[in-house]
Length: 418
Image (cartoon, rainbow, N blue to C red; front, side):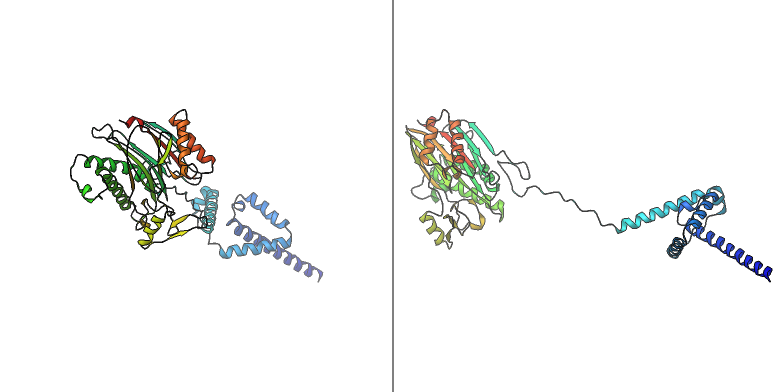
């Protein structure tokens, strides 16, 4: 009885041992299909089986459950030909492992979020430029000095925005008249586009119109002029209006405008024209004489003109009168949205050049807001040079708190006096 019991137990133990060996083989084969570390040599296989056997039972159960889950979702192993197995089974296993790695990388890449787009900041290319620079090009220098034939200029940009002042001088297109010369200072608002256009085109239009009108007994310009006008003044007025029309055509609804003060010397006479708050001041025997009257909404005649045309003028909290609460000047080039009220009809003054006419100071309102007419004339008169006086006036306006662009031009008139 004891012998049969012992034989039964031995058979049970042997059967259990065979079951364990079969289980180990199944575990190793399943794991080898997923990991190249278990699909190597028999010696390594035996070592791996030893590690599994030495693992605690609880961990072995967890490993078996994980392997079963992998078997449920894993694709069936590829069938490898016998020759391939004989020639290099390790190569086939490595290739399969590499394929698995590639698949995992592809799945990971598919789950990743797309890279953030880096959009470069756009430069400022919305303004059309003329004398101060080309569209989308580099801005002109914020400070400059110019010395030319009979004139001197200094200009400095304000700290609030890019330079919006400009200037123009024409002395070589005189049609044989050595007494013909044009000088202009311009002050833009709402961008550089308008001032660039005007500084390039106004002087050319004025000189062309004056030369066309000269020598003609009866011209269309004279017929349209008022009785107090002469041919040159009428030509200047027509050139201003033509420049404004050309600017509005180019703008096509865009905003922005420009003020101007210009001087034309012809035949011993000085013609000063202006729009807005640029100003021209004459020095005669050391005394300052303003040849322009600022076109601003503070003038009663300008407010009345705007109201007659159906517009309105309001006063801001700072005390500045503005057209429709927007623009402080009442006349200017451009400003198409306000063109019905902000006209381009210039004020024109004609003055014979006689002994005692020394020089002319033409400047943007960045100077005149802080420096009086007589102070400007005195600064030029006492300076060691005309160029130094322009710099001194710019510095004077800046020291007194001007935050606007400041452009000052001094024109020698004595060389035109006959």
